[in-house]
Length: 392
Ligand SMILES: Nc1ncnc2c1ncn2[C@@H]1O[C@H](COP(=O)(O)OP(=O)(O)O)[C@@H](O)[C@H]1O
Ligand SMILES: [Mg+2]
Image 1 (cartoon, helix red, strand yellow):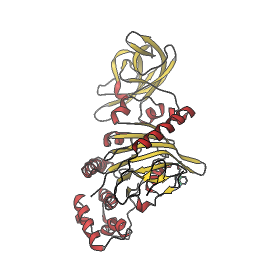
Image 2 (spheres, rainbow, N blue to C red):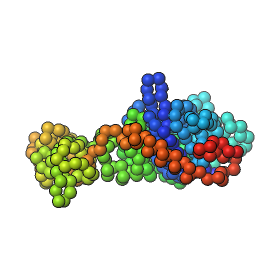
Image 3 (tube, rainbow, N blue to C red):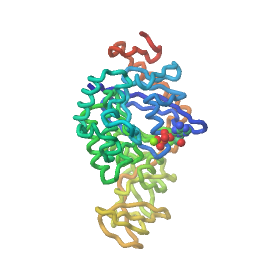
Image 4 (cartoon, rainbow, N blue to C red):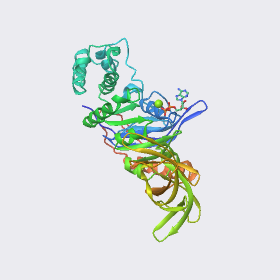
């Protein structure tokens, strides 16, 4: 049986020499949730997973799996990786070339000292679930990319992990196989019900794969929410850039219909709050630009055909934006534009980054921990009070 646990990460800090890979990152992942972490290359995604696994030791913060504290910098708690019950699919899959598939999958149980017959039974069972029974006596080099990926997932699941961590699991696959692999993986993980963290640099993958997602940029969590919450309220400039939204600056105006912003000689209704009469930046998706109507004036600089739609590069008030449409428009043409779901961007630094924010976050964290503390714990797990430490 795979158990299903929450993951709570609080104020995790990790430095490599001069590089601050994680800057006080906090997250709460519900049991059974498929949670994505999306961020550009070098933003700290792999480091965060390795901290959860116990392969890296953070300088600051704490990690809870279910009710167990597996890491706490202040209390000196650092549970070794093999005792955390975390399944991991590394970015490269890292199958051992000198072991057949069967032994690759069994490895995690062998190092935990399980008896051979019990191991065999579990390998057969997981191979059946993941439909790789016919591959068990092959060598890794005999497998296709998609098959290697399934074996890597089997190897992570064989230990019956309390949580599953997947590090960019589709990035090594041929683009043609990626969509099938993504659908298979999402279905498999959902059926197993295991709490999963799925790391990717691809925002479309994160949106399509997860119940909720977090955006990690330069070691800091900038945004957490459901795919719709994040996509429909793109109010953080860094997150908007990562999701390839357009960003334009204009003057805000308050009218009876609400807050507007002046762009390219016209006016567009905006979501969010900003003082009127000031310069403000707004973000919007290339899909939310309507060509051929509206008060904003633009000039089509170039376009490309992308199969089901065209992508236009349009100059608006001296800035280039992208717009997507099924309709054909001529290069060089002047067009009227309307923009929907235009969101006012907030300040560059998230609130947690300010001293006041940090104080408030600490108090909220403390309260949350105390409220979460329950005297009962699952058998065999150490009972750890979030404030007082081990109480066994
Ligand atoms: N073992 C290491 N030694 C030194 N720097 C590291 C090490 N691991 C990661 N880093 C640095 O930490 C930052 C975050 O890396 P990583 O977590 O691998 O990012 P991501 O997985 O998002 O691409 C990068 O600047 C990277 O160069
Ligand atoms: Mg990485």
